[in-house]
Image 1: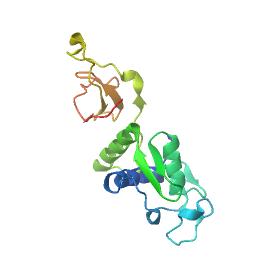
Image 2: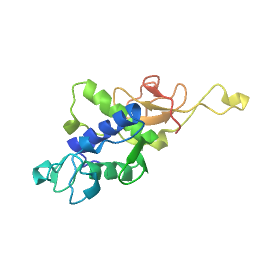
Image 3: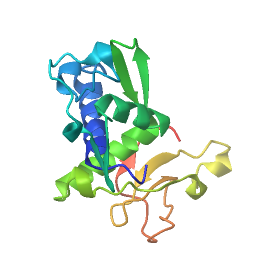
Image 4: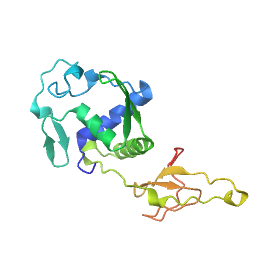
Amino acid sequence: MQSFGRDHWNVLAYVETRAVDHKGVLDPRQMRCNSNRHPGLNLNGFEWMDGWSTRVKEGQWTGHDDWDCVDDLQRMGLLTLDGTGLHPIAKLTPQGIDMAHALRRHKMQGGSFSDFEPPSFCEEDAKPTSPWLGLGWPAPTFRYICAPCNKAFNAGMGDLCSQCGKHATHERRNLPT
């Protein structure tokens, strides 16, 4: 995922939009498609040119298109695909939702897809605390993204971000951990 560049993050943002506004149905007409690699998905009518290949941190992956980016995002655990090979339906995983949230924050702060650095998702930060533990109730856990350091982590009420030490009271995400 560290090698992902502009096109992978653009595809993640596109998938998130399609998941929210179109029940996850991807529109092949809006995606770069190398018909040599994905013959049934080239609905835009353009013959593939290698200059359209996926841009990554260190150059380009020749012949790699948006459908390959979708596959890469799926392999990284950011999304799942349902539907059929010709009519895919994408769903973001909880980690994918967190990543899309971090990407949107980065863009709102003036960043671009090409200079986005994915936050680390560290599960060892899961230390739920709660006044309800003494009552035998489970501690509510949520996903947080720390605004100062852009790190996603699991937290309970009052926990601190292990990287910057700030209280985890910002950017609460009601997602299963």
